[in-house]
Image (cartoon, rainbow over all chains, first blue to last red):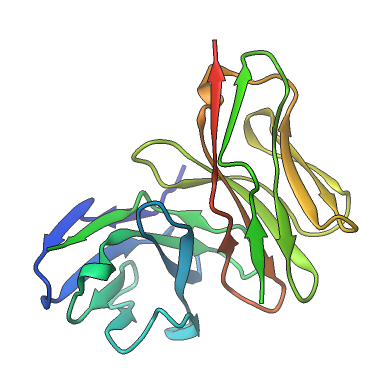
Length: 113
Length: 113
């Protein structure tokens, strides 16, 4: 069964550094998402991406964040200058259509020190 | 705005007993409703969804959920719980005009042998 994959599984970085989290969505899916879960808190929506552009973003997704689909398979989340409060589990998800359920990857645990 | 409430942080049941995990939601329009399960160190796995039609929906691993519009609820149920059902369960809602999922805080289910 096809799965969403994410790399790395764990990323440790220093405050102020740039990080790129990588995701490979399921191959025939058209809609892509990033969510995050700060330890002990709810899963929060960050951004959705369709047809090579952002279709919706949350207030969390400020100028420090960007997403890209650099080729036909990868979907990346970049944080330009990480803050301590960016420490969280970041989940990528994809879906074949807007009405379908979203399929989630295993997550990347980001630790900012 | 859309939101989800899972009133119970934890649910404990004996194996073979019925399992219910509660969820209520709030959306401005008609909802799409979802249940996901998360096992340790794994991503969110889709269990079932309500889009339209029959209020009782059946999903993976013997789970089902009942959509109740008047009570704005979407409780997850399983007639006979297994020890392997022990996990973290998330209810999620999406307004039909949106792309994003809004998640509840999650309910930890423990099924004792």
